[in-house]
Figure 1 (spheres, rainbow, N blue to C red):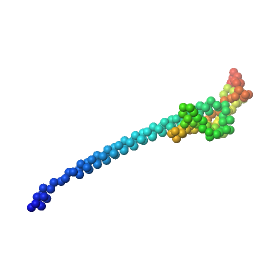
Figure 2: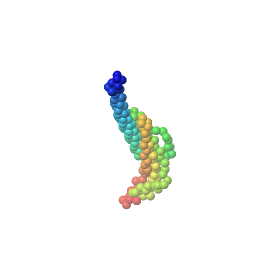
Figure 3: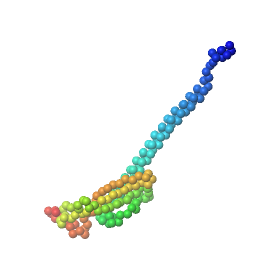
Figure 4: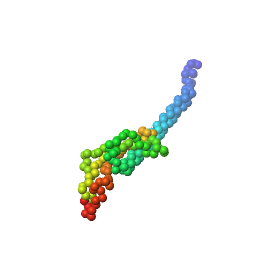
Length: 165
């Protein structure tokens, strides 16, 4: 009889339920924190990549402005192409630089300068300017076609009569 009472009065123990509930709560909090950490890390990586790309493009634009400023020397630049990087701002940002690669473009005919007698034709040079940022490992390239201006030593320079050319 004692055995029958023991069987019918058997009560379930709830001591293990609290442990299982606590483990499940910890697992849910761990999954949520992993998701937040992954999302914020990806945002930081994307932001860093965008900063690097913008700095590289800015360096390439600085190189393009330097090429524009020295357009008279395009034949010399084409003859002396080097892969030596030129720093944009060596004091404040030594990680951004650009490289200029200049070649004579033979597929485009020389540009005729209007207003000059004698049919002054200026060859077109392809200039590929690659800006890089070594901190972020990014680079950007700009390809521009440029023709040197007429020089004062040219016989056709400044011969702009009333009728033009």
